[in-house]
Image (tube, rainbow, N blue to C red; front, top):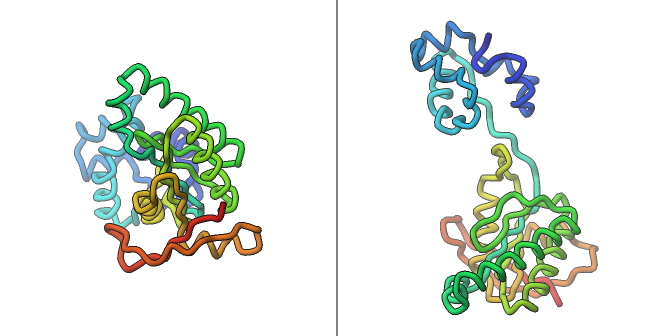
Length: 232
């Protein structure tokens, strides 16, 4: 038996199974590091639901036994982050019931367009969505379609699109690329889609025109970033 129960570990941690010997510990190693009581907690039925709380202990244990902690799996993606402008003000003006109904329509539109353009909904971010795409062209067209559709509901969106390496964390995405997309969205004017240079370069020849929006500082991101707006 290894750290998690061998067969289930391999099937539920598919990103790393080919190098499992590098990071799987034996029962004796785990017990030696943490002691039997804490080790037994790792064998509870819901151990994967608590995986995040175990992560630091797990890495410490690996290092103590001379094993490298597995690096997060990463992949090059285009990420799109949308955000409803002045959502709190609108919710206050409409009242809870009407706002919930309006938000449900917004969510339906966003999810429909994400699927239509071949994207993957990563998560809902309160008043918007984080989605990933293998094609930056599809990400731009999806962003524009959502923006235009929700405008008919009286809502305005800010949308940021960026292409870069993303860390896969379960069903979520993390890493600087996601952070950049969020900051680009925050920089956008109401009703505007903004993209980074990585997106502009990747869609050369696609027929999408861009309007240069100049260089911007993105909070928490080093340097300045040239942003562009897809043409109408």
